[in-house]
Length: 201
Image (tube, rainbow, N blue to C red; front, top):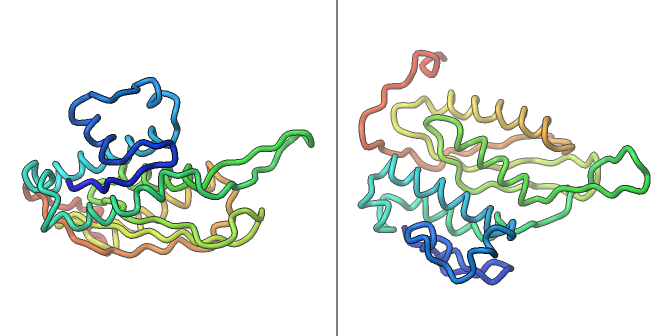
């Protein structure tokens, strides 16, 4: 894959982290264990490399061009997504406590839910609305690619349901809508017949 040489806020680059995944070499390995930004980036890069090998083949995934444009679009947004982003306040049982979670943590949750669903690869995801105000309506926008042979509507519906459950369980956001857009259809290395459940109207 062609990795953008963008620096994270901690100083490391996505290209350097990708090289670390390939070779295991990095000047300050202790930093990776302590930096949540690097850990989030590494998790996303691992998922992308796995998806690339599964959907496109080792050669195409390594080439970073042509049919892996969907992967490059994810990488183009990765630097923004692994940053902490806005701070989302959480309720506390004790008046003296201040609890919060980050926008980046929500984005990582969304991507993890999508990665766990067969036949789907999550692309760009964004939270629209003032997430810093408790109870304010928020819209989650997600672009995704669907593996050829899987019904688009079925995969999108399954992803929307799983995202709604995960957001309700792990956040206090007032999610007014989950907007999904299928931006690509991916050709698998081997034909993968859809399940009978996915063929249901």
